[in-house]
Amino acid sequence: MNKISNQFSSIEQITDQYLKHGGKESAATAELSFEDILRRRQSVSEDSALKFSKHASMRLQSRKIELSNEQKERLENGAEKAEAKGMKESLVIVDSYSFIVNVPNKTVVTAMDQKESGENIYTNIDGAVIM
Image 1: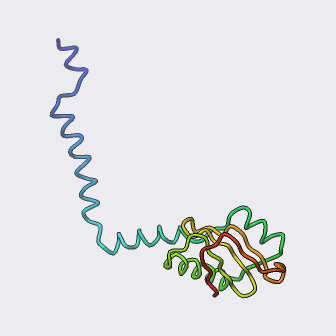
Image 2 (image 1 turned 180 degrees about the vertical axis):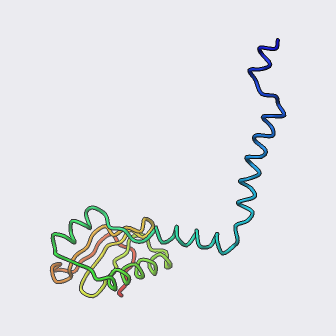
């Protein structure tokens, strides 16, 4: 019997091991301030910035459209305004550029220069934002 008992830990040893491990984690979590939690949430929301689909990236490149940081910021602001109004597929116009934005996914799905789109007809959108 001694051989078997030496191979296994006692219930007390196992309990202590797990309780001490869990206690360290919960103590660390309890020490987080509201400000720390808010900063973490904000950094997550910054990661969810507007992105460009493969199609939109190809359109920007083929049409030689280069957006300045200010234009990108206005495009993101336009998408945020569309989201606030409950739009799903929005046309966002920044200067002479038109972008179709899938608002829930925060993704630009296509881009064009208004000078190139002869008829200026946009389909399958539920709203427009002019920045």
